[in-house]
Amino acid sequence: MRWMRAAGRGLLVLAVVLSGYVAFGARAGETGTGGRGPLTLATAGDLTSYLGPLLRGWNRTHPGEKVTLVELPDSADETYAQMTTDLRGGDRGRFDVLNIDVNWTAEFAAAGWIRPLPGDRFPLRSFLRPVVRTARYDGRLYAVPYVTNAGLLLYRKDVLAKAGVPPPRTWAELERDARTIAPRYGLDGYAGQFLPYEGLTVNAAEAVYSAGGTILGDEGARVTVDSDAAREGIGFLARGLREGWIPKAALTYKEEESKEAFRDGRLLFLRNWPYAYAAASARGSKVAGRVGAVPLPGPDGPGKSVLGGSNLAVNTHARHPDSAARLIAYLTSERVQRQVLTRGALPPVRAALYDDPDLIARFPYLPTLRAAVMSAEPRPTSPHYDQVSLVVQAVVHDALTGRQTPSAAVRRLARELDAVAGR
Image (tube, rainbow, N blue to C red; front, side, top):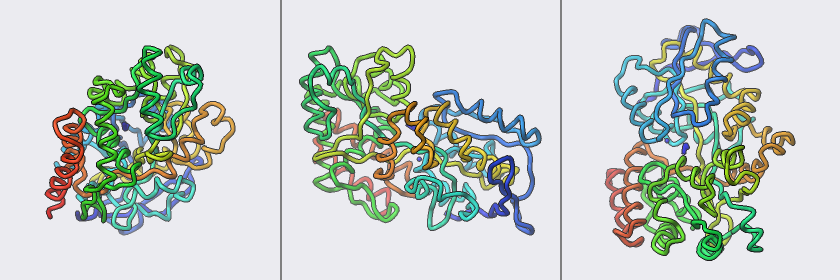
């Protein structure tokens, strides 16, 4: 998916133009911001193998600032565990630049693990507006948006055409088609990512948001989940598993497993990130040329996606923060952002790329994706986000497996989130 306390010291300032992108130097007299040299970049597993070539381009032109890529597991939970273990160790640690889940920015900033960045030195107005909010905490910029993401509903165009129905816009239409059309073609109905990991938090949040609810407010200080909307959203998913139009196998799915199920021709509908559309449309896919994408449905019309993606941040104890900022500027330049999409099938943060006719011809879901990103909502914001997510995963999984009713699960979720918030 993908696929999350005292502020760090030092600001990276003094913008200069270098090789067609904005770079940064250290302000004279500041401590902990000087120097250029080699770097390490830590990221979750690169599922499309695009990042290595991008970094080789940097290394060829910056021989004194070479970047070593450290790929952590592709599971968000495991990546989070390894990054935070390293950051809690103090001193410098292994990682200079961190490619972090958008929902980790607040926690990492509050813990003092990443340093604030000067917002007026980055071309933030060139980015899609919602993504910039994910890089701020307590009124300051602590990271730079790198890729964005929003969940889409992938569907089999050929099957729906034969059935004579349009792609679903509402939960009722999705449920009807998953229950009645899918079995006629030997398919399972609908799946998302329902294994208890970060992906389940995303799917649960999208269901709650689509029904008009929320989970937390006031940056995690207020618990708002005990609502009819939350019961409706979680109840929709639980009903699908109970009635069988969501297959039991979906309880074991992460992004990759669900993508492969769709790519192998086993599903009529799939909630996933846009990279799954690219994979399902590629050569070797059993459904290539027969895939469509629309916004996620909701109770009465299009629903809400969780705003996904990742931000680039600089470790407070980075060896060469000047080089770190220059690397971030390179990776967020328009030229490289174009390659993030064309090589990695990852949604760029540069708004202009979504209006490029050549890119739209190659990635026809871009207009749908832009609309989904612009209306997307972040996961619950909290300086204790890891604990919040673990609670959501455990409680919602119990509802999906029938161990608790959706109503009981929502009440329990409210109690346990109150405990996380220290209330």
